Image 1: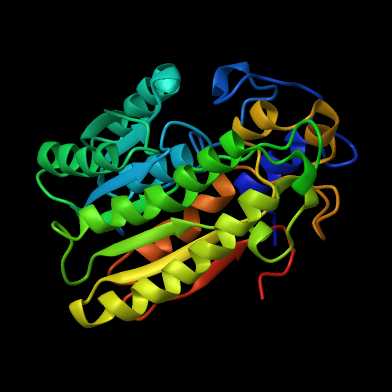
Image 2 (image 1 turned 180 degrees about the horizontal axis):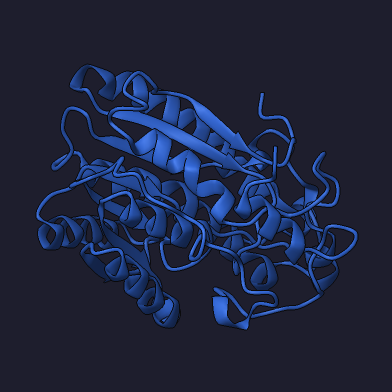
Length: 300
């Protein structure tokens, strides 16, 4: 059987040893400055109407995994609101054009989710402009893996940013979304293989991702009686702006080489997991689970 187009493209983008060229940006990073530019499914994702008429909010939807999910959701028939940081305006506007090319409504909601009130405002603005809300993807995330590694290198400023972005924001956004979600709707959380195989350089990030797995399981129990499903996706090493923006250049070059598939993944290779979990028909009996898309690294 021939290899799928997304997988073919993903493999062709890596070097002979499965990594990426050494490069570095300042946080939060921009897609246009990456070499090569990631594959978000722009030329490969074909929708089949699995999310027709649904309203979705994707945090961190301007780039990386969030961008791939936004494109896939739009082509599956959903209207899409994306949240992003002010420095990511260029990326956000580009995503909006892809959503609109799919014939769906695109809503841009800027805001730093480290602030509780901003989280609530982002949800309210998205729901108001979309005319409702059916799917919430808590995807915004941050890590820092430069300088001294592990516990000795951990600073209060770094810890606060990681925990607020990854954990607090997920809780505040999900809580605010309950005002709009109903039976058949869903919340999806972006976890990480780091929850299962933590790297010394990302002690704080890995801890938040393990916590998010717990949050998904907990909310699935709480919201199940209301017909709201809650699941998570655990990516492995994926080629997004966060990597050159927060890692040393040599770490970028080696990402994914230690996976069984021997390469870094592309954002487009994650989109299918989110579409499946968001689909009220295909995943109607799926809640409280973590779907691993890791290139073979275990998530159990």
